[in-house]
Image (tube, rainbow, N blue to C red; front, side, top):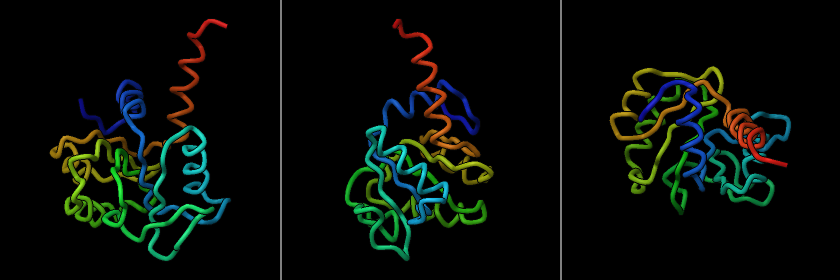
Amino acid sequence: MNTLYKDPTVIKHVLAKTKYIAVVGHSPKPQRPSYQVAQYMRQQGYVVYPIHPAVKEIDGHRCYAHLADVPGPIDIVNVFRRSEFLPDLMEQLLTLKTISEVKCLWTQLDIYDAVVAQQAIDHGWQVVMDACLKIEFQKIQHSFEAIEPS
C-alpha cells in the first residue's frame, strides 16, 4: 500500500519497520524544526543520519554532505528542504547503491511534489508528504497508550 497522505495505517507500518532515518536538511541549530525532530527521533531509539553539505558534525553525530555518503542502510528519507528541491533529491536517491533498502520518502509540513511522489511509488516506496515525522510518531504512540491497560 502506498500513500501520498497521512494514512495512520501506513505511518504506523512505516515507523514500526524503521530503524534508520536520513534527515535531509538537518540543521545544527537547536531552534530549527529539523534539529528538534531529529533529536526526538533519536530519543525514541531510531538511528538518525544528519544530511547537510556545510556541516561536519551535529551534537557528536557525523553529518553527511549527501545521501550517497551515508555508510549504512536508510529506511526513511525525511526531507526538510523546500518542495522545489525534491526533483534533484529524487535523482540523488535513484543513484544510491542502497536504493533497495529505502522504504519511505517522507517530506515535512508544506513540502510536496506529486511527480516525485509518483516516482517514489513507482520504486515501491511508501510516500508520506506534508507531514511532520515527530507529530505523526506522537499520534501513533498516543494511540498505543490509549489502548494499553494500566
